[in-house]
Length: 540
Image (spheres, rainbow, N blue to C red):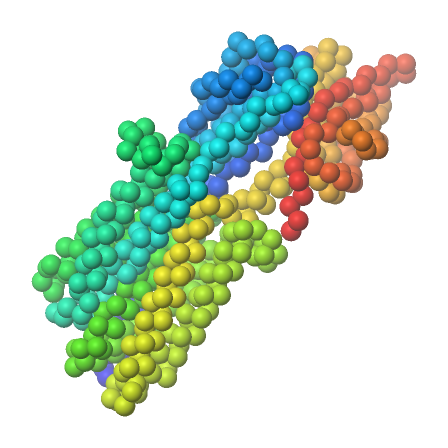
């Protein structure tokens, strides 16, 4: 290796360290950890039967959310839009004047802090269930999902191959125009894809059909999500890279470098990985991972065109890339592994969740890519530089295969939008199922942890009807479902003011009837009744 190449590698290592420091400065100050929101509790509980319409419906989420669409479907099938008030991590929804008995469906759609829309349906009945309950609305369609995936894929291709390509031309092949036509075309397409993806985000947030793409409401809704910041940063990165292609060598370097920083910043501004905690770690890791992929992917097209043209310029470009790529790959692999561990949490989730299966596919393709890249770096580079017969042809073919693998990986990444990561499912699974029962004689707060079928524990706090202390002699919990035996367990008092049951086995999910027998004193006892919703077991 020549002194100039060694100097280039040292400068690039300093540049990578500088980008990492910049990422920490830009995103590390955001200390709050957010996740893909999930519904943890509701009042009334899912599937319950209440005797009268509630004063309000309350939805409790795993984090603060922004309400988008709240719709109530009555037993007769009629629908009405309702307004929701944000109260911490809860949404409070005033009940309309309807007193009709039967089954109601409350469909909700909110935006979580990672910028992704989340939707669901709460079902409960007043008086008695309807013989034919209303149908749940279709909140998304296949055409919209395909459009969202396609727009994200095109935007990723433009950011990584386009912005990265402009950076490669400016830094690896200054003054040359290897593949400048395809790189410029990708940037132009990306400038169109960014606003299209932004508009589709609004439709996704609303659960609206594709034919409402041009509506003002869709674009206003998209602007209310964190993805709006991502789309704006991506657009600016693409524009800077396009300007870099038309600038002189000195200015081109700084414009393309700013564009590369913009790619990392755009990806770190929203999305599953960037919204995970701890923020001081995950956002810089997303930044480094995205910028590293852009450097690697962006170099592929210019290198392939350079070696088709041949000459000293191609050799110099390959030497610079060959010197730098081990540092870049090490940084992006390390960042990717950190993010994967945070998102997945347990290896079982790699094949028991859709997110894990997509990640496993991505990792498999990435391993193939790394093997191919290693072969190029250590088996083909030297023969090509030594001008051995046939080596150049093999290198160009190998770069084409690398490019195709990169495209496949980006296609998988675009699919992450449609499934929450296992860490979010784990938060939801660990959340207790809780219920408050209040009578004139006594009240109780029951929490069953975790709130899904399987092995659980229960915590019960009992008080008088006016919230005073209640020194009961004993507490018994009874749980039942239609068609199954009643589960009964006596609670013990560990000394912290609560009554506890350390081990219960709930065999099935669904709505369970609750009876809490409180032995207050000799000849005085009260039974508190209610219902609690138990979620299905996670299976991992």
